[in-house]
Image (cartoon, rainbow, N blue to C red; front, side, top):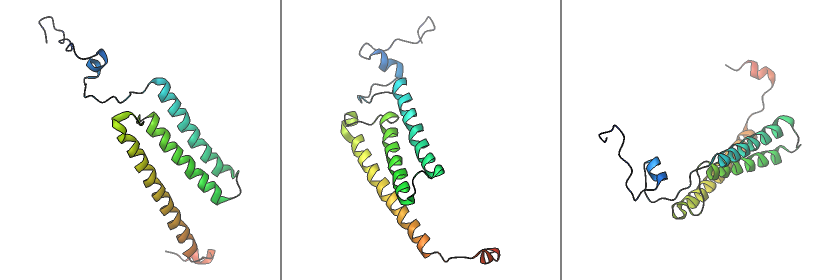
Length: 138
């Protein structure tokens, strides 16, 4: 603190933005704007409402096609979150964030495929039960 009770000024080599945020580590990651966050939020709401409507209204007769459509919209929503909220693009951090995006998409694909495979086999291999058998369950 200086003698007048004010904080010392930022060094001359820091920009006003760096002095305000308290860091200048050389990374050029873009900070979001209000417009960007509103676009991301709007897309997230839409990408949540569409699958909800598809499932609740039964708009598509094929359950398999509905499931694939919901999963596809989920993957798109992951990308929207990574771009608008995590600020991932090919330029930030030397492209490493793009590699993280690709790795995430591969993991999501494996997880979704494995989940569908397990659910399909559980459904196929479950013993059918009559209502009377259900009453006798513990």
